[in-house]
Length: 136
Length: 404
Image (cartoon, rainbow over all chains, first blue to last red; front, side):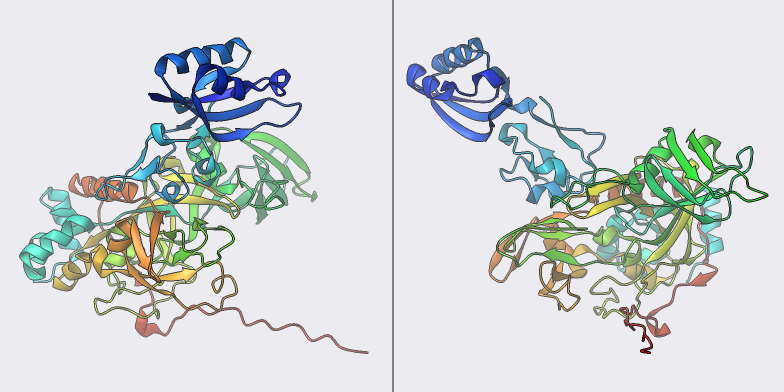
């Protein structure tokens, strides 16, 4: 069993298709929707964790891509501009997953652990020097 | 044996000065005692890097041809004050770009304002100046639109009426239904966060609690350049209650600071945005404190455990100006990442960067050691606790209108 977190970009034409249901049914994977923003007549973005046998995840995501959904690894989604970050530490209470945190209390340096980032984007507007940004 | 400023400066010139940071001084005094530390340490360097709202820039753009008396001006769309002579402008750090949606959809993002323009000027970027005048015999021109660059300005002076607060509130939120958006950042609902903003043991005025050495004319490290304290900062309040070590238990002393923007570094003067609140400017400040005697050694050895700050409720009480502290907490506890309040574990968030404060203190230490930064004796000291100076609220006096 494995898990992969990905960002799915739905073009407008695919909004009505039951992509996730078929992914679950036909490829025997569980899809954990971490975040979704899909409105009629617009491109949809969904952040999902896909769990199952690695072979099935691979095949399932390939099938999704064949149907016109762009699949991106999640860690590319929110990035930190290291030149802008001042390590003030405000984001650590805004981040709901602990992806932004202070591990070393002595240095007080803020780490960004993209593996734990669910791309909720709460840090983007909360960061005073606006060092966090979304990259699609 | 007390030391003098002159003796310390002679040592700086000779390269024999002993300089340590305010962090290092904590251990030195703990190990050797204040008397011994005062004998061999000459200078303790402090540092802070945080949002300091009461900041701004004085810019002289040079005269236009034909001449113009600028009445209204915008820099990259941010209004600057033109009510000073003809071509002097003052750009405030918290001024918002014109037509920003502000908090019309709460919380607003507050992406761009005076603080950002100041950083871009220091970074050497071109800035668009648009100005209007009403025309006079000596200054006939009425409109101006031009790119300006800090290199071409006659003067670009960072002139900050209130910086380097000696201690500050810690913000918490007792509302259970939503976060509150403040100048101390997003304060999470239901005591979900404790937001603080001080470099604590590294902060300049917390190392000179009674203002014995920092005063008007003190040379300081400001935004990467050498600047000066030019006055007590606005809201300077030495009357705040103090702990036994002399350290105020809340926001007290402040400094008005001035320096040449042309010599500054955009890494140390950073425009920042506070969601739902507005824009501001993060300023790096470092002050070298002369260890004139044993008392100064003791003061500069203050540690985060010995400095407390008041917990204020930014949902109820603080906004209405009626609140009393919910309690006090030390910077050692704040920096541990979690405090306890009303039986709840509350995660902490800093708005002032401790890693950057440490960097400032170390940079200043290197400069003093290298003979590049001499200490200056203040021309006047700041008002002390004995001065009777306090920080008063506004007493509103609605004008009485005559009834006919």
